[in-house]
Amino acid sequence: MDQIIIHVDMDAFYASVEIRDDPSLKGRPVIIGSLPHERGVVATCNYEAREYGVHSAMNIKEAYRLCPQGVYLHPNFVKYKAVSQQLHSLWDEYASASENIALDESYLDVTDTAGTFEKAREFAHEIKRRTKEELGLTCSVGLAYCMAAAKTASEEMKPNGYFEIPTPRDFTDLVIDRDVSVLYSVGKKTKEKLHSIEIYTVRDLIDRQDEVVALLGSNGRILLQLAEGIDERRVVPYRPEDAKSISREITFQEDVRDYTLLEDVLLLLSISVADRSKRYGLHGSGVVLKVTYSDMKGITRSKSTRSCDSAVSIHKEAVEMLSALKKRPVRLIGVGVFNLTGGRLRQMTLDEIFGTGISEDSKSLDEALEDLNVRYGFEVSKYIGKLDKGELLHRVAEDMRVHRLYR
Ligand code: DCP
Ligand code: MG
Image (cartoon, rainbow, N blue to C red; front, side):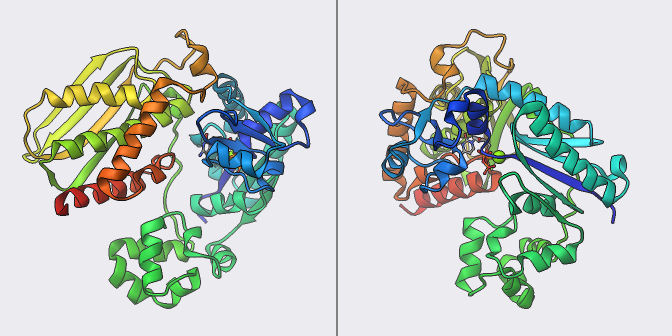
């Protein structure tokens, strides 16, 4: 076995922090996001609220319908970020490399620090115990021989769970009768494609390997490896909160001449950039636009501005810069915010600190999305909030491109 990986994920993170700091909330359904009379969505909720069917990304009105007796609170990102730093520095003690993929979630490479699986198991239990004792919060921990299995393991017994998957064989045995989406690379489209040839479970994948490869090509081979429990990714030391810039970009399958489409894709990219910065409590001081033309000539334009905290403001700046460029066919487009300050250095408005209150921006974002839904004939807005996944962003943009082509 050449890797030993621990995956840690906090339970109902934002909600648990609020409950820790106000014990009168204990035992009640707690929903973090906007208040029921505001526009907005559920960021997260505790497990008590989940029993009513409430979940992350659900419209707050729907949450209220399911759970009117819940306690509704605005998120306090400044606080979550501080807690996150404490968590990560505790967990880092155990790893030679840690990849912090969210405020509340990390992959820890303990191959060398633990040396053996048994010792790593001790680490895992110690991480759970110390996270509870020192921070007053519960987490779920997975221990495995690779990243994918470690993540599956940490989800297995949530909340306050521990689970281990020592070998690829154990991984496959565990997931063999589950839906193919248990494999991390299976998104909605891949799942639909697999369903179209009546492959539903991991077992179906393994039984019908030739058909999977015929259907999905090289992606199919990777998928089959995953089904056999093989994931060769390494933990890459990464702290998103250290980022000096956050950007997203997209390369189209075919060059795009339609600048309306480019503006619309920029909106998706801006949403994703704004979400990421918000997640990590970061604030930019300028917007950068990147364009690569079909002849591979690349251009970047940037503009310093304080108003780049919301998707709408990032988008507005990016569109302005785009409109000043030569209208030649485009192969790649990207947008980002730079000079991220980590929030503390900058005076934040109360709205920003308390997050999801109704701002003019969020109203016009809703309108902009509604407009996309109508013009592209599919529910583009459905994917908002999930655009963090590179693959999904790419697919939505491709669907939009193809729609414009055949309209
Ligand atoms: N989050 C968010 N919007 C989402 C998903 C998550 O704002 N659509 C925030 C709130 C969560 C935090 O990120 O507390 C961590 O996300 P997780 O997916 O790990 O969810 P939780 O930690 O809340 O719950 P779980 O116990 O399922 O991990
Ligand atoms: Mg979590």
